[in-house]
Length: 385
Image 1: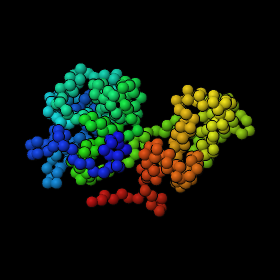
Image 2: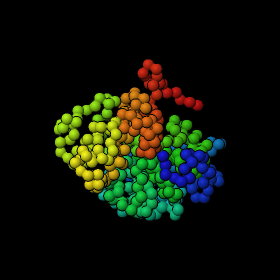
Image 3: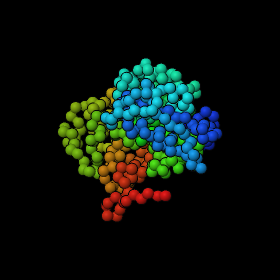
Image 4: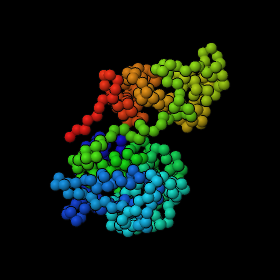
């Protein structure tokens, strides 16, 4: 899933862009790309621009991009993989690059303090006017710390969204998408989402045929459905990820107390425990409020105060989380998963799962479990031509 109005039709090929980013007249005028490697750069992401932009060629096999890597001062930098890299260039190449890519970092002032080292700020300030900015993963912290994302939509790795929001409250952060295209500034979620974004850049600049050729060469999908929510841990209250998986794997013991297993101490925590033990049952608001020994009105207000969500939204999130665990860890039919997670029907499960993470139950199960053979083993994957 991306956030780009031009891709709202589900990935239809874009017309090649014109102007600074998309023009290509002669081999000597290839699109210049500069990759800025900062201290603590994510090693995997550092190489992506060379593979996916540097590997893009036209129908005659001519490279469409010239990709060069630099550090601020031309010196070595330590990577996340505990080795040091020494690029051939310093930040002076930012003055001529049409696109600047900033891979993620795992340390340093941007991610620790929400600020830039003055030398990095000066390097970015000296970039070519109108240059397109692309960040991968926590590279968005660098752009945000430079003030380049103020008031603009962006994304970053789902595990780093909360500190990002605290450091950069004016950025319109969307933690659910794989990437955001805001014209001259593009940001991606973590790690492999950088591949999705770079393929999108190629598609935007030169069309789907070129981007698909790059994807095939690198043995990756040219387009992925869904957003990064499908890869994040299950949402909800603390301990929700270990919540009872309903009848599918055996109902857990009821909380001690009344014969019906009602929680002994009323309140919102008790209501949440009550609900998590009964996700496969009807849980109208009156029943939840009763488990908390409150009126519906008081329960609704207190629940929102304590969790930041309405009871309905919280309950739907817990049921989606349970459905995800069942799809990952059991061979139950989708219809049974829907019942055990409290959605009742496969259609309702499909609707809620797609709204939450952007893909269908079947696609989610295949992603985490792989196709199965009749004997229960994994189907061998074959590389198509």
